[in-house]
Structures are given as structure tokens and as C-alpha cells.
Image (cartoon, rainbow, N blue to C red; front, side, top):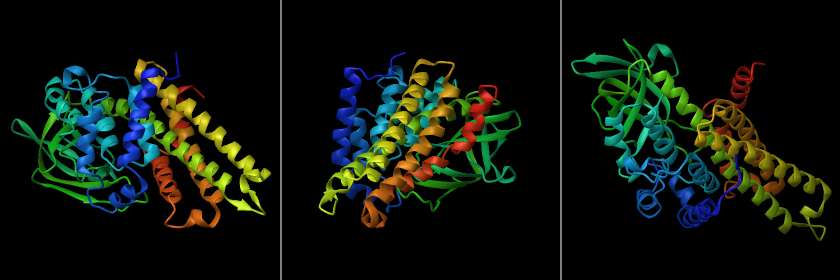
Length: 366
């Protein structure tokens, strides 16, 4: 096992960082988070055409670059640091991940090349407020009709293709429908983190096609959520590092009593604690990414551990960043609150730290 980065991986990081410095500065983030779409279509196309980011972990036979989850994790880390407003996580991690594990070669051949080329945005709908009004698939001739609701669907309001985990007479299955299909209502949900859009989907006899084997949807979803936890941990590392950099930079510049506040012991200790938070979280996230890339049997344990630890590390670092900045850190004009809100929303996504620690305890037999 090698957790360090190769020269090629370091170069990938540098290329992505330069691109995001140009395309996702704070001004762009603030502009996009107040739009309904929540992303810049031109930047989305450039990500695909110039860097091939949407296809980085898609197999070459499906139009992608065929890199591993480790390279995808590096890209997500940089995106987390830049607070990139784009449907990347929903399309590349969730939807493409579900397709790749569905066993449906026809669906993969049809959808993955378009996703890799940046021509299609996709979403995975699996969360429900209540099972009583959750999504149900009803047979309709050779196809299916979806009824019910899904909520907290990342980028569900703009997705060209929606993959839906729904109950059917033959068990839990994965179904796909067009984003503009009849009987599909899509509404944005007000959330704490404006940089990441979420939607509620209502299905009223929406035509759909089964993806993969019916009754296999739960297995696919479990596999995707393990990868999603590892992917989100990588993204959280990018935000944690950016908060640490902001806090240390300000501590070096802000003067009190003629001295930088970073020279005072209380601030030194805080910054040192944040560095420990960041580096231990990075180790956990990198190990989870390695397990995902290698198909290692420790992935369930590593993903749960990484999601729990990185969630807490990001949240604490974002909160301390505000405290170290003092009064200015609480203002709307300072970017610290953007990272704090992303940290809090990411902490709860795919299960909060307590959920993953319970899962971790079960996995190791405690």
C-alpha cells in the first residue's frame, strides 16, 4: 500500500488547482450559489473538453480516461477546497458509480460516454422522508411507471437523467427516467449550503426503465454509498485544508499590540490543533480512497472511519477559522461562513459521524 502521491498524481492536482483558481474564485461561487441552476454550463463543458474530469474514473471502453478512485479523490479534494459549484459529485460519483455497479452493460454504453463527455448531467435519487410516500415502481407493459417522492436529491432539479432507487413487486430496484419526463415534478429545497443544490422529486406515473437486475437495487446502493462516503471525505479534506490556510494566513497578518496574533501562545495552540485535525483526516481519507481504488475488503471500515473523522475535522476547523478571524469572520462578506456551511451540510450527508461510528463498531464486531 502506498498512500503518497506519484509524480503524475501531483501534476493532476496542480492542473486541477490552476483550473479551479481561474474558474471557481470566491466571486464566481457567490454568483452561482444564488442562481437556480447552481453551476456555469461553460465551465462544465470546459471541465470535460479540456481536462476530462467527468470521465476521469469512467472506463476507457465507455469513453472515460480509466483512472482509479485515487485520482478521482484528488480531483474532489481540489473541488472541495474551491467550493466548486457544479453537479460533479451527483453525476460522477453517485450516478456514474451506480451505473457502473448495476451490471447493466446496455445502460452503461448508452449513458456513461455522454456523462464522460460532459453532455449529460445525472442524479441518484435514494433518500425518502417517509416510506409511506416513497418511490414505487409499477409495471406498465414492457416498462415501468414511478410514483411517490424522493428528497435531498443532489442536483435533481437540473439532471438530464435521474436514477431512482424504488420498490417494485420484485424487490428494490434501480430505475432511470428522463429529467423532463411527464409526471416528474422537481422542486429546489432550501438548504444551509447554497453552493450545493438539492431537490425534491415527485413522481406521478413517470415512465421509467429498469437498470440492472430487479431486487439488486439495495446491493448497488450500499456499494455506491460506501464510495460516496470515501469521496465526500476526500472533498472535505480540501475544505479543511483551505480553512487551515485561511486561519494561519490571517494569524500571520493580523496585528495586536504591535505583534501578529499568531505569535501569541493561545493562537499558536489553536493553529497547531487544526493542523493535527487536517493531517489525521487526510490520512483517513487517503486510506479510504486507496481501498476503493484497489477494491480492498477493508473499504466498508475505511469509508465509515474516513467519513466520521473527516466530517468532524472539517466542521471543527471551519468553526475555529471563524473564531481566529474574530469579528470579520462572522460577516457575510468573508468566505469563512461559506466553508462553515459546506462543512455542516457535508457532515450530515450520507449519515452523520455518529451513524458511521455505529456502523464502524458493527463492522469490527464491537
